[in-house]
Length: 103
Image (cartoon, rainbow, N blue to C red):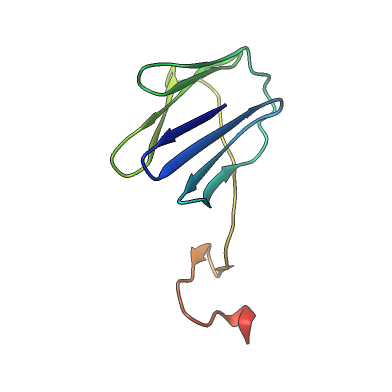
């Protein structure tokens, strides 16, 4: 499923569940595959709802990108993200012209 909002594109894969957020065609954020099966995936007026056995994940656009909300908020549920770019030290993303990997 694809959902375009302004410069952002949300791409959702159902089996296994994962999502990718693009801005101007470049990957901004990509989740790792989720182990729980998707019971339903539906587009709403506000965004997208993904129902899992333990919770429902709501993904809605906002002025800066996307909001993720979990119902119920006390559910035992986690999302992992793949790290892209040049990461060093304690996980800080280095924004510099010549990163250590470029010599």
